Amino acid sequence: MASIRTELQKKAQNELLQHAFFRWESALIVALTILLTFLGPSPLGLSRALVWPILGLIGLGAIIYTSLNDAENNAKVLLDAFQHQFDISAIRDQNLRDDILNALEYQRRIEDQLQGMRKTLVRERMEDTAGRVSDWINNVYQLALRIDTYRQDDLIEREMRTLPREIDQLEATYKLEGNSELRMQQEQVIDSKRKHLQSISELDTRMRQAELQIEQSITSLATIYSQVQLVDAQSVNSSRAERLQSDIQDQVDRLNDLVDSINEVYRYGD
Image 1 (cartoon, one colour):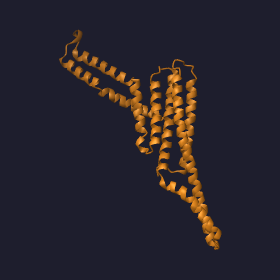
Image 2 (cartoon, one colour; image 1 turned 180 degrees about the vertical axis):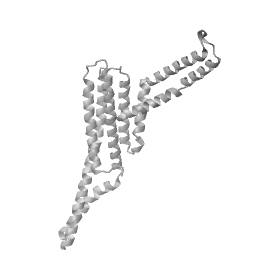
Image 3 (cartoon, one colour; image 1 turned 90 degrees about the vertical axis):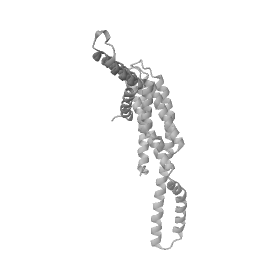
Image 4 (tube, rainbow, N blue to C red; image 1 turned 135 degrees about the horizontal axis):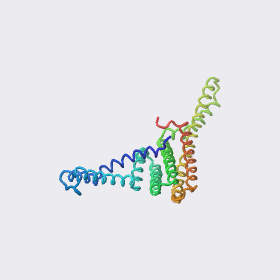
């Protein structure tokens, strides 16, 4: 299955291509080509209707080539695509928004580093590494969305406070009740409320784990970025890239498992 980065790269390449065509330099070359084709001199005695369009296509091709191979611009366009993919405005909590922005910044820096590498076997491995980082960030984003929604859920917050008191009161009433039918109903209500309290307590625990995991992930992203800088792009035999891939995949799997576990007890988006 293609990574999020691969899909976004395709979109970014289309944007870069459109940008190359609509640059003012491209428009100038097209205008000059048309003007010289009809009104310009005939270079070396050759047909101007042939020479100037060819030269214009060469010039336009050079602009497109430089645009598509501009490492800094490529990384910026890809980052913009990530920011569009991961809608920061959907997260209301400022601390969580800052976490996602930090993650995207590390993604941008890793892309910058990657774009500066020569086309080698290690570069290919690092492309795969960057793809796994994008999946990692996606999982961080999914956790942030769920934590943000949970923090805004005043009903769960209220139940966490009131349910223990309600259970205590029901248990006290149950001990004093003499009617067997009422005692049976009270027992069922108490059991139901205990299960509900246990469920939301488990949810609260997993959300706290998710908060800690996001913090740990941002720290790990910083470490990964520093390790990416140390990868020797000239060394085909370098094993650092493989270790990075393994470390990142562990993070992706761990976060994915945590997202799934939260989904089991919290119907996010409903």
